[in-house]
Length: 84
View 1 (tube, rainbow, N blue to C red):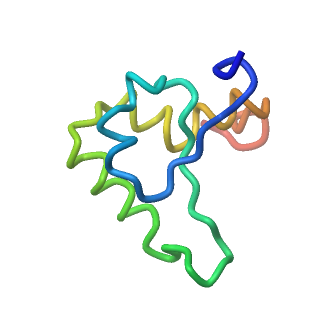
View 2 (cartoon, rainbow, N blue to C red):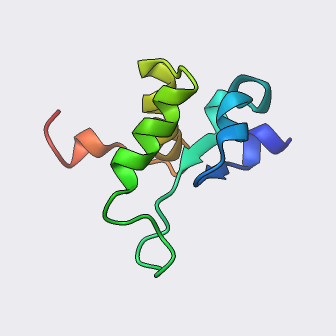
């Protein structure tokens, strides 16, 4: 039930990245918390990529966490609006 109806947000949690496959790689979505003052903006993309690389995330895992899971969950096709 949880995996079908909930998406888990990742902000800055190395433990969740290490356990991404146990949690479920298809239900984790990154968030930058913009425009809140405690967000990582404007360095969020670089920060997240460094954390993902530090835990050995594959390109597929990175794509899922950074955009694909959120697009599937919402549902939203970015390429319907912007050329690939």
